[in-house]
Image 1 (cartoon, helix red, strand yellow):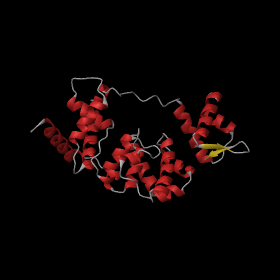
Image 2 (cartoon, one colour):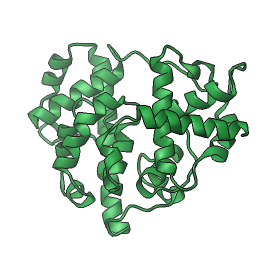
Image 3 (cartoon, helix red, strand yellow):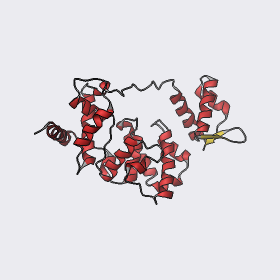
Image 4 (cartoon, helix red, strand yellow):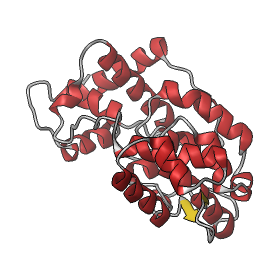
Length: 269
């Protein structure tokens, strides 16, 4: 048995005894899997679980998501953060309905052209929705390969890991294989080890408390809930540097999240 055979056998054995269960793992619906993959970007699974169920119940298809307003979508998205993902999903649904007859493409290169879908997410969607042996890397998979193959090395680039991922991906059941890798990666971190510290791409997430991200989230939540708000009410609600808040408001307008109406009040686009 070579190193790769031992590695794959070990991962499968681990998975049989430690498999995690999530709603998005119990469906082959490409739309549902797309929603889960977008939600899981930069967000932990325990925060996604409840929101995923709520989102799928409220918008069960590309068609229903397209028919919703951005305000409807943001209302359900509340609590997940990174609201641009919700905006991208909303735009993406319209493209899928208009250009692809409501059917999510199964080729990474096509998926990459859609709003908010990068190279890794495009490939992961194909693996999970269509069981295609694509090659991609995310934080837990990165942990597994660094821990297994680079124990005595630092500053490891993803370019060094991707060929190993390609060589070991299960050609017949890539969907479950990637789930197995992710579950082992989560176990590694829970055991007190974080191999990603040795990654060339490792960076601590910036502090949320007091950040522009937090203020953006507050403003979007406020306008989503109130429907129409005044400039002064936003300033009073945030209670921070007025110049900073106005800059954030202007950015939200430029990004087509909110609009300023003729009478000077703000609402969701």
